[in-house]
Amino acid sequence: MKVFANGLEGLRKLRGDWRRPETLLIVMALAMPLSFATWQALLNNFAIEEASFTGVEIGILQSLREVPGFLAFTVVFVLLVMREQTFALVALCLLGIGTAITGFFPFAIGLYCTTVLMSTGFHYFETVRQSLALQWVGKDRAPLFLGQMIAVGSFSGLAAFGLIYLAFEIWELGMPWVYFLGGSATVALTLWAWMAFPRFPEKVEQRKRLFLRRRYWLYYAIVFMSGARRQIFVVFAGFLMVEKFGFSVKAMTLMFLANLFLNIIAAPLIGKLIGRWGERRALTCEYIGLIGVFLGYAFVSSPWVAVGLYIVDHLFFAMSIAIKTYFQKIADPADIASSIGVSFTINHIAAVVIPVFFGLLWIISPAAVFLAGAAMAVLSLALARMVPPAPSQDIVSVFTRAPAAAAAD
Image 1 (cartoon, rainbow, N blue to C red):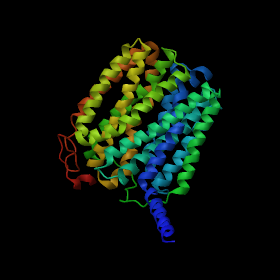
Image 2: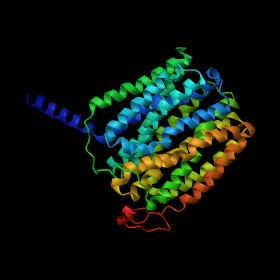
Image 3: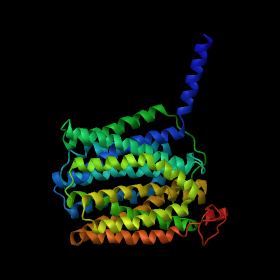
Image 4: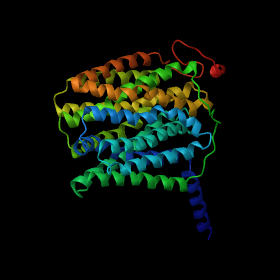
């Protein structure tokens, strides 16, 4: 009887152990890629083969996709009536629903509308998730934990891409049903998380108003360039594979699978590396590498070289953890929720216009699109060198020493 009682007590402790904020972040990291990976894997083929898109239409679609990211600052207003944890789960459901219905609208207006719905859920979720992670995880553990979250998301995406490959190769499902299954899986896992986890209290009450801090200027600049540069990869690297090299859905999925498998291994190691190197050195390494990658994209003539560049490019994204941990170190803890929303808007200022204008440039010269990406990486490198070796609330850049009291400026 005593053994049985001890066993029950152990189960209660285990239950208490897993119902933690960090576990919820991991569950959400698992749920998101089930939809987004499905949407991403099928988009270029669906747009070209089903909706007859050219570079112009895909540019318009990608610009529309970034509008919710540009409006991410409105998160602060939603938080006046809804807790961050609740909002994260609601946004995750919107992502799943938008993905689930995408395949049933194979025409331009339908694809634009479902993309905006999916993107609204995705961008609001990412905004709130980043805020929660920086609030719930200590500064000393943040680089490793954020790397682990990327690895978990990559594992989930790996599973999604594997199922997509089976759906086309073995089960012979059409794209609409693959979209539906991927989106529904996210919705189901989100509803389980809603019921399984308690509502966690805020460690620090967040300021629920919009503001820009002069002391965060370098963070804003790095985030802006990151958003501009990332659009080149997100919009045109995958489009290059389909349009120039004729990759099929199965070929694109296999490439994504290799990408995610490497991320499962590499992301936690990169998180550890950032913790040891510091943000300045990590960002410098990332931007030097991206200059070479974009120059490679501009002149690539072999599909195998293009795949290699795509994989290396994606691995460098894991180093963007350093942008988040840099902000965590310099920020007033009460500024995190609002500032992350504002930073998402800053990140998407260029993202709203770049796909349209670069889509037009793509028709003239695809190489010019990637050369512009290399120029953006050069500017990002210059900004990275302004990050101090040991950032803090008192030392925010190599030029500026700002006391914590300046948070009210």
